Length: 312
Ligand SMILES: C[S@@+](CC[C@H](N)C(=O)[O-])C[C@H]1O[C@@H](n2cnc3c(N)ncnc32)[C@H](O)[C@@H]1O
Figure 1 (cartoon, rainbow, N blue to C red):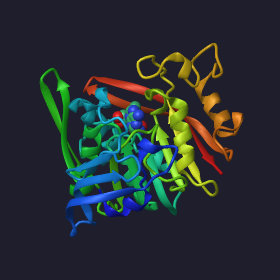
Figure 2 (figure 1 turned 90 degrees about the vertical axis):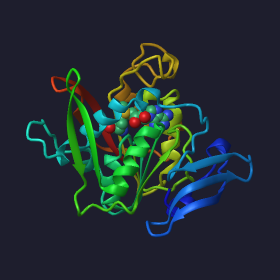
Figure 3 (figure 1 turned 60 degrees about the horizontal axis):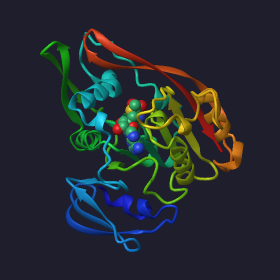
Figure 4 (figure 1 turned 90 degrees about the horizontal axis):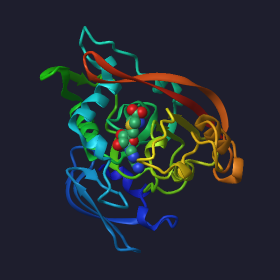
C-alpha cells in the first residue's frame, strides 16, 4: 500500500467515529512509490490491527467475510476480459471500448471506486486525478489489480471450449500513470476513509451485491466532498436474497419503504429524499449501458446497468 494513502485512512471498526490509524512498517519499497509491502495499521482507540501483506492492506471490519463468488480464479479472468478487452491483441474477440471512463470528470484531485474488481476504472481515474484508489472485498481481485499496476501487463486465460483455454495478454498503454493508483481490501459498507476525502466517487454494479445497500450509499456519500463533487453510480438491480434480505433492497419489491424500481429509488435518495444522503445531489446524466462477462467462447452473459452521474 502506497504511503500517500496513510493520511486519509481511519479505522473502519470505529465508524461512525473517525479514528486515525498508526502504521507499523515491516518492509517498504522506497524505490517504488514508497509502497509498504508488509506491516500493520493499528487503531489507537479500539486497538484493532489491520494487516498489510504482499503490499495489500486489508481494512475489512470482519476479516472472515470474503467475496466468495469472486475469489474463483475464472471469475478474476472473466472480469479481466470484461474490463480490458479493448487493450488485447486478439483478432477474434468482440472487443468493446471501455465505456465508464467517458462519464468521469477530469482534473479531480482524489478519486475512489468502490467494488473496483480488477481495477480498470481506477486506472482511468488515476489518469484524470492526482491519485485514485479502489477497494474490493475480494483479495484475488485486489491482488490482480495490484499486479497489473506494478507490472503494467498481465497474462490470463479463459475457457475456449471444454478443457481448451484461450490466453490473453493485457498491456497497459505507456501513457497511463499507475504510480498514483492504489487498491485495498475493504468493505464498501464500512469505508476506511475520512469524511469528504474524495472529489469523485463511483460505485458500479455493486449495490445489489451488498448486505446493506443503504449503508453502502451512506458511506459513499460520507467520503465524498459536500461541494464540487461527482458520483458515478450504476447497477443492474439484480436483487437476490443471498446478499440481502428483501426488506433491505432499494427497489425490486412491491411493499415497504423502498417499493418500486431501484433506479427511481436511488435517484430520489441522491436527490435528498428522507434527508439521508445530504447535501442533495443533482442528476446530470442518466442512461443504460450493456456490458458482458464471458464463460467460454460461445457463452457470454449480457448485463444491462442503469447509470447516473450525480453532481453537487
Ligand atoms: C458485479 S461486480 C462489479 C465489479 C466492477 N465494479 C464492474 O462494474 O466491473 C461486484 C464487485 O463488488 C465486489 N464486492 C461485493 N461486495 C462488496 C463489499 N461489501 N465491499 C466491497 N466490494 C464488494 C465484488 O468482489 C466484485 O468485485
